Image (tube, rainbow, N blue to C red; front, side, top):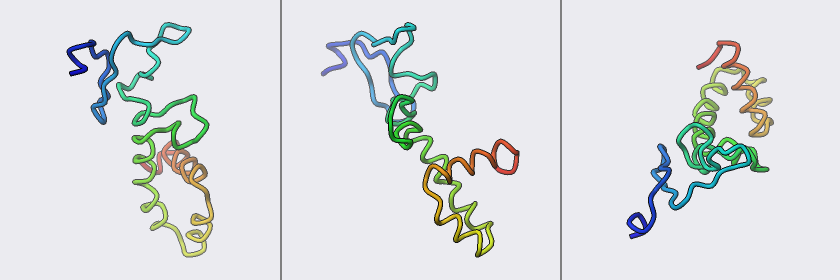
Length: 105
């Protein structure tokens, strides 16, 4: 068993994935795998990733994608066509602005 060989230093609060051994730290001394949310990079996101979906992680994708349908259903037919033409990043940005304005939670 790996857990007996090395001490687990982080367990993802989302998927349960564990990291073992000596915790890697960045130049500021912060844990590399924990961005303050107790999640691994797959779930919580990797701020250094090139792909937007990898930057927001599984939890971020679920958060936004859960709202895509509600936003689309509330639009007129004309605006539904515009919504359908938006790329993933634009839809996430739109939802973020709606939340910031207090129009959506």
